Image (cartoon, rainbow, N blue to C red; front, side, top):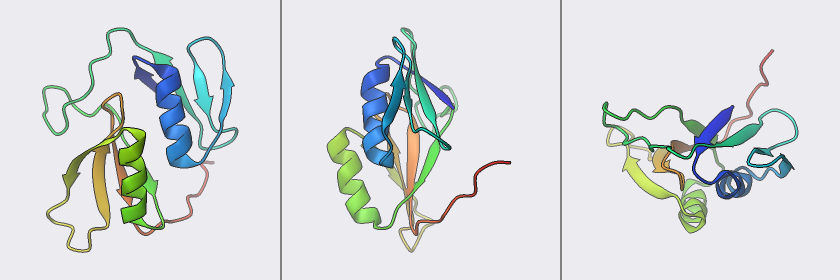
Length: 121
C-alpha cells in the first residue's frame, strides 16, 4: 500500500513506531515500512488534502485497522506519536475499537483484541 502525504519520512516514522516495523528502505522521498507483508510505502504529495472523516466531501481515502493487545496503552502511544482521536464508536459497548487520524490526517483504527492476520495469497 502506498500512502500520499506531505512529509513521507515523518509519516513512515509514525507508522514504524505504531506497527513495530522498521523503515526498511528509503529512496528519495519514498520510505517503506516493513520488510515483508505488511509493507507500507509513503509518497510525497505536495498538494495532499487530508480526509475529513466522516464528511463525504473529503472521504477517508483509505484506513488501516491496527490490532492491539491493550487498547488503552496503544491509545496513549498513538497520541504521543502525534495522532489525534476522531471517534469512539457509540455502538461499541465493549470499547473494542477507536478511530484516530495519523499526523497527515488519514484515519486509522485501533482494535482489540489483537488477531493474527493471514498474509494474502
